[in-house]
Image (tube, rainbow, N blue to C red):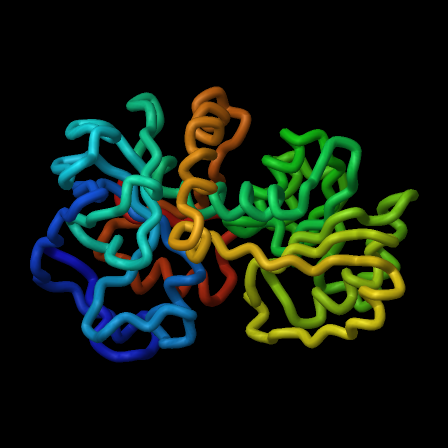
Length: 322
């Protein structure tokens, strides 16, 4: 099969397109013929060697795919051969074929394009896990960092489905438009030098929950706006800076900081993810959630797609194929 190969740790220009052995479909897995691939920030970390997972070189990056099931391993009854699916994989997605554990595979109606399906599992799976970990409920106020990104925009949509008030933190006007299209109630500039005050000014009763995929100064400043008993869910560190934490503030204000790793949850507690797919797919089908795709590129343009993501030039998702 043809695939993009990572042969040395580095940036997108080091990736090579060429032949790789077909994957082997084992028990509990399905083989997917790939029609479209979602492009994720985590791919940049993976190929640079800075991700929590370091596959043996050479390997195929790519964590999010959509296509059709062409084979199933022993013991698999769902999904079936011929079904349209979207899937999360640890790596291996930028290829003609990939195998995935069934818990990480969502059956997608044929009415939904493969491009849309490929932008679905990681962002909405991560967002649903984050909001679930936060115990976000109707009437609460949630601040979402990186709100125009793949996970951030999904968090906005799913938070609105739960009846929450959303304050979206974005970096420019184009990203503000994405956040508003997703349903954000208030917009705050993530570039503000007075982020704490801006967040406090955006809500009369204080912030109940913060969803933080950014880290760095965003974590520090937004935490100061969190009310007594509030919760922060940490998804990652897109800023490249891992913040430190003063535990005395958590003690005095009875606040909680919670981690939410979609990839590790797929491994440690797969049912927690697979149980959510039917509900999320139903929302996707009726238009209650909608991946914002800003670039659809040919499969051969993977390095360009990753560089657009790296340079923060995307207000929405990038997808290959579809």
